[in-house]
Length: 242
Length: 145
Image (tube, rainbow over all chains, first blue to last red; front, top):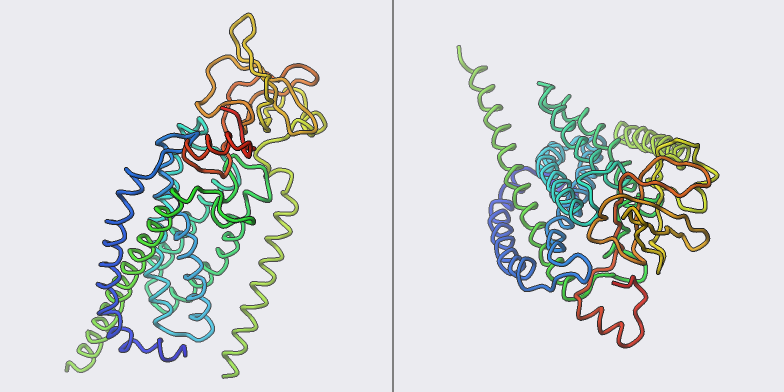
């Protein structure tokens, strides 16, 4: 099954259509979810209107973690089976995940000020999320620092796998330790603690973020593959020249 | 094929060892990663003059102002409670039954003098009407506002 998807030609043929379809789906979901999230959904009984930050903060956090998990899988495939497409996938996901992690940290800070009374505290959840952002940046820096693509791919994949350890720490930090951040609201034992009137716009926004992230990732993969093809063609030309 | 299996084993073993190392590190750090200490444990854990964060719920009926106008309230974890004094205005979410973290220098026995008060909020999100409906039906278990 892996070999079917690992064929770059087949990937290019498929992603050519999938990329704009996902982009259109993201646009439709944002058009549906944003008015609900920012205007028509009810204010929270405690926080009031500030709760609207959640509709950006939570999807950004979910997919910053989700993309990193996907990068971990791609890195694993790359290390064991040495598939170029796995390297390309992991490399293309990294900037998207980094932006989402940054968005999560920034919106969290803006939300923390009016609710908790502080922009930043070194509690386990906030700190582990910052570590995820730094890991993304480190991963991208490693790719940029090593010229040989194969070597860069291998080292970046190892760094990515090491960073995977952080994902359960982020997820369970609020359960393992006393933190300023509250425990999980949606994925928790006993069901969601968010009122349905707030949960449905949140899930629509999460869907919109997912489609947008997937579309941008595919776009990034396509451009990385084009670049590899251009480099290969250049090499061939240089070799065939007298 | 053989080489691929070899790589698979090496990576699996490396990840296993790494998880073990991370697990042991976290286990060793467990006391230090706590963002705050509860009223039950603070007297045993904190030294005089040490900067600490005291966390718990604002005890119902404990909020008052003293003669100097400073805020007085108790932080409780259900088992023990501790008096806190704070000069200044607390954050908007500060209220009875709500999570709170008081930051200041620990002095044994005495009232905890906080330099900063942070409010926590729980994982429940709902519109005001839903909360009022729960209160009317007597099912409300959250903080009073």
